[in-house]
Length: 292
Length: 282
Image 1 (cartoon, each protein chain N blue to C red):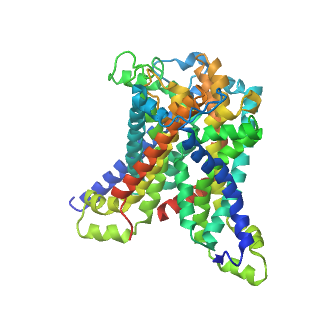
Image 2: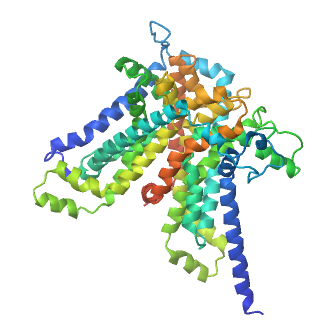
Image 3: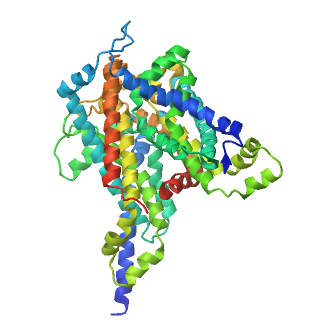
């Protein structure tokens, strides 16, 4: 261990670039962004004026903003739940003593690097109402007749986004869960097996409790990432139909860079930031088990 | 027969296990498979019912059509920005991570908490101030704006990956170098960094993938096609002109995925180790 007193120059050299970068490109923008949320700032306006909480009042009196918040929680929440459960299931299957684990893991994990813009294009094709393979499959199994207008039905479009998010995130949860599973000493499960505990019992009383924290952390990371995600709603569904896939990230971006209303956009961004902080705090307090 | 019954049951269990694993993995890969399949079909075969996985006629025309100046420019832009961001974020990340790992000072843990927390900072909110900042600095429509932006949003993960690595690195080698009279900076550059190659690679790949993916900065901080990175360029150029030519779109999608898939296949182990080591420990 170094002490700062003995190596002050080295200390400064190591930290200066990151503090400059993070300070200038993260800390300043977030503080300044919160400040702007109390103004009517806009590149289209010559003078910026302090307007108090007007932007926030405007947002919360606008039923469309509530709809955006609802869409965001619906889409990001369900995606998080699905990808966590599916990722866990794949990891449990891969950890059950089968061979070629590395191969299967790589096959699934490659999904995690497929660019979002590619998913946006691809999903447009998979869920195409007339020729898409999803509708073809549903038709051939007799589940539906004719067409399911995935992109044009406000009830269906969020599911196109949810499928995309869940699919893309399964590999991440799988990799984390699998590494955690492989870290559980074999003896623990063997001892339980000798005592006559079946697979489901061991899963419920040994494996899942041991995985609980790491899964919850992975889920939180994914939820935060889904909140930031914007490519699919922006490119594929364009927030529609009738605003059904208009999520907070898209709303904030458009307010800022389509309508150039920096003040209102900053207010939406600030609401988003507060939501994440409160959510993470509650999550941390009530769900995560503190390690000794 | 009573002897072989458990063996039989075990065999059946095994078979069921492999079957479910294969099924799940295949379902996960359907989208990619369908993208590949469509990209090799002539347009008229794209609209077959029932859909055909193996094309009747395999054509490379859809790919040949992608070799145009616009896509070439977008690819080059994305490559420059992604490599630039990967180098910058990884190098600066390594310095910071080493500092947090090796210096005894109050606030190291707090600094890590801030870095990790900053991942949740709403990107559009950051962009509002970044936009004004880049206007002032004259960086709009330059690679520098994109490299800086991508570095800022990825450096927390880079620091986190590398700090985990440095924490686990045995100190003996460094200490031996100090005994020989080397300065801390020299030890860091010529002893520690070379040992950290796997972690540096993991960080660089992560940053590259994120940068290759990033849409909003590309849409906002560039204004001409010759500066746009891939996602923004595709949204603004290709999708605007797109008229149901799905086989060509799929070929485009495949080509956009290829660089990151190549990276992934070559460095898969390194990358996995980087991601899981920290996550499981923390």
